[in-house]
Length: 488
Image (cartoon, helix red, strand yellow):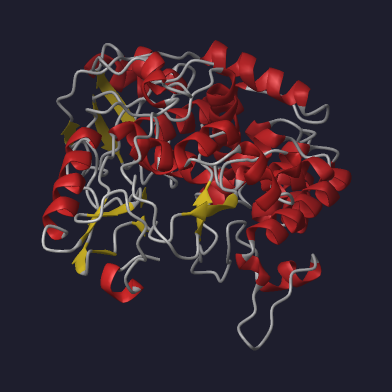
């Protein structure tokens, strides 16, 4: 499947125009491609009771466009956030025979992979369980504040069981997805209300009077998210590229034929309209997003693939040559997408054997993004800096500034550390590099280059190298109290 990728903007007033003056590349998609990919995905799911029809292709195409164009910035944040949770979710879904495409698509639509998400209807957690359904599927909710709906691992198991049970009822993964949003009884009522149509195609479901706008859009939303996941996985990408575009938001039905006269490139940029007679104002996107222009990008596919060469194997240059007496520190490190044990060992000056011994229960099946491992044997003055840290007793918010690059951020952090420690007898090692910072924060930063502009306020983790004594280089000395140095 080929997608259009563009930047997220706020929805405009009716027919008001939004513009982003960026030079980004446009990669077009068409209905035939979406239909082919849907059919292949259904075959992988062993979906025999639900057919891919034109109505399904149309609405899935629209939500692919919405997620990867107007809402792409938010989509990328959710994709990066998913890295921490997907391994466990896919493991739970696999146990109950649910495809990993669904393991991504459902929480993407339900909560954007947020474990604490809460809806106005009372649904809670990454999988948005209501309390009665949660309890029925084994999640504990107590008066003392206990609520296992916030536990994404247990909720993933409950979700997989629910989908398995409803797939048995409807003999369909697609309809089990529908039941997750509508409820089993509502799906049964809708199928019974389809009249002479067997109800195994999407058109009679989408047009059914029993469903509200958000409900009828749920299936194509989940399938669009699942196809995006397959696209990313097949192409070994970790995020969607972000081209510029122009669009108009239509909040009421409009004749497609009349619109074609005003927008000559209508079908090329909005292939979901090729077989439509009227614009459908989607509730999920607060109206119909009509693309009118796509820009071109210098952000190539190679730049957003996994394992970019510039930061694959960062060279650590620890500045802590002084041997310091004291008990060694243990730090906790969150494994990032492109990390492996040899790389982590090299960066922190330890060995793979030591990492495996300290984390034998975690690494038994290999490390995965989001795993928290312990790294022992650090110098007694080793510490972690982030957005709320003290540098040599000075409170410093070492977060990114708007449009700052990783290069300039690294320089600013080094300058800050050296300035704050200038009057301290102990100097923090500040031999950092953009590659090291990227290695430690890949899942927050996404796949970027050292000179890619960053958004402001990102709290990046920095693992300081050793502290050295200005007047005792090479000698063995004891570190001063932690409250003086501020180390952890």
